[in-house]
Length: 338
Ligand code: NDP
Image (cartoon, rainbow, N blue to C red; front, side, top):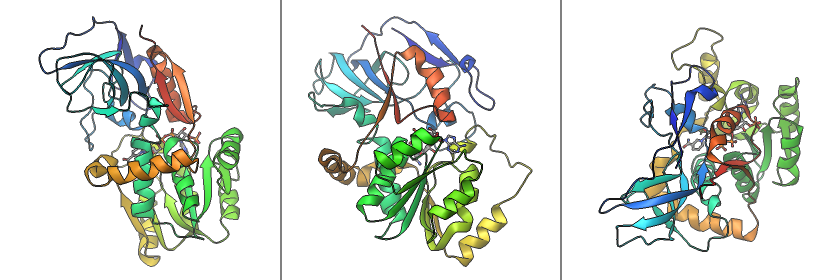
């Protein structure tokens, strides 16, 4: 059995020394518990936030504690009537090969599910994030222009494809030519701009001749700067993530202050800017999402691409890479715990 725990907290970008691999014995389930073997571990940007002590919407991981994470697991032994050995479950075992659960944090998946790991992506949390943020806050209409960055990742890719289904014009932003090509050719966006290009802002402006009606905010940073002057009256901005700032310290920093400009635009152009944390919406909306997204994926109207990495020991390095844009599609770890 292997697990990865938080070693010292990072300051700035995480490095390998912020993680430690441990080899405890496989735990024994007590009465009312099940023993789970992890098959798939999801790696997601929010994990950077859990490595920090700063107050947030979820408590931090303690030093020495197993890193958090969504997982698809198989039940090995069960001391519960509602789970049987062999059951496939979606859970939150974190970065470890075996875990115990009392069942309250588990959702059963069909045993014959074709792609169980998709429950960590387009058919799970990131897909739900895209669906809720775009349809409940962004509300794109046919003919409007939607811009989304991190466009090849699970949230951005799904946002863009749903916006196309709604009849919008969709411009992606991604890092590098290869990702941009994928976003246009495989995901069907109308265009994709490389945020590393020196004339990125000019290219984005040229791709949005009618301005921007919905900016699905995933990254912040210079993408946000380039988007601001292009926003139309009554633009909507679901604020989903600001990954360009996850390594910042959240205290107020001296430096160029965009707030007065942004606030005056919000007023003059009557924007709607709304942050959301997807865990707030499971009870009310998840069933609708699951039905609609299941159909779209089944019909091929929404396509999904994964970046599969083998072995838990690779998780720290590829997670560090996720924050730098080294992933191609949804990053998942396939566990090799025989
Ligand atoms: P991705 O798999 O898309 O990975 C993150 C991507 O962000 C990288 O691959 C990189 O892509 C891009 N990126 C990193 N740094 C920068 C930067 N400085 N400027 C521009 N792009 C950058 O992630 P997800 O699809 O899982 O998540 C996307 C966003 O959604 C994140 O901000 C995440 O925190 C947020 N989120 C929010 C939720 C909520 O409840 N509010 C729930 C789930 C996700 P590239 O190479 O293309 O730049």
